[in-house]
Length: 459
Image 1: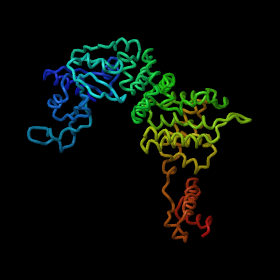
Image 2: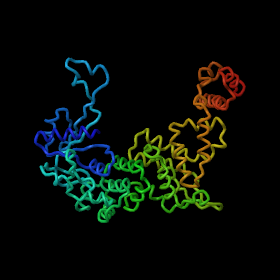
Image 3: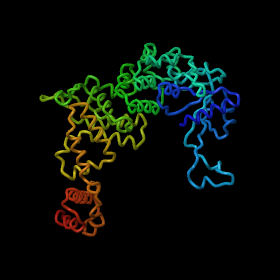
Image 4: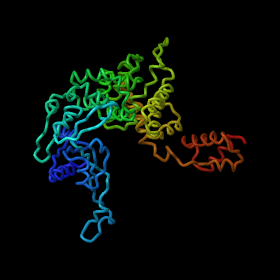
């Protein structure tokens, strides 16, 4: 969202006699010299007054004092350019971006542990600041003069690297349980410490996180996994007691030993945290969750055999557990499918140098194979540190043209019917045999494929 557009909203509100400031996380990020993802505005104007000043505004939480002001975007197409006197303003913008404008308020009681039962609008920015979550998010900024309104000690906590609840932390987390996860996420992202009383309040209220919707929990966990400090985030989740509440399956990894000849780094939990450290910056949510869950089946399959520690069947068990987690956290069908595929295939990398050419090519054409490869790289770096398989596959990807990995079919089911075969399960067996021979370079033409079928399969 454009900073300039948000400033223009502030100037317009002030021209109508209202107070208005940049507020919340964008102020924190600007003071840290980071580029904010969004710019939010806090104002003394009520939602009705904001909507009167900005007619195109639409409400998203009017009862809580929140409306969105869409940012005009001039179209580049000719259709939006030719009216008498200049640009056709009725057709010259789209509502693809918007600035959140919130009225100064104080929150009354919270009965659901997530949303205020009611709010009282205010003319006092101090009253608005003290009802927010953390001091580092409780500041306001005058973008014209550069003055920072800090009623909660946010600047000092920024300088000291501290995440501190505003006021009584027990009350702050009692109002909104999601704030416990947000405290962990901010502490991990900025590499800050959580202030002692704030930390203790999270430990006390961690079992109450279940009042938060599963989608919101999933989204916070996803941000922790993809913002670049996932290892620190999950250690904090563990230390606060939140991990065993939101992801007990990950908590069970602690203390599960692994064979030291393959995993000198330690137990399954330590290995998983190290993997998170080796994920690419700003990786996809599916890769991040695939890495987190790739060994989730190990605790249930742990056994000490005469030769070494074993986890027989941990992949199959892991896929089932990962599916339960994805369903519980309400992942989309697409995202869940890719996460489960990453868990399901991660052990196949140990066999790639011995695969037949056809098997290898089918492996390379797995949907989103680049994520499978990235997970394998992180898995290797978090254990033995050997990247020979990763390098082997990178070389294969460079050497094999895409059309050889996924060639056009040489024959179809219609061809089999023409040869006298009756449709049924055998069709798949025949077509797969032809495809394997094609991938291995033994068949290159339709005619050769027909002769292959006649010679290998009886009617």
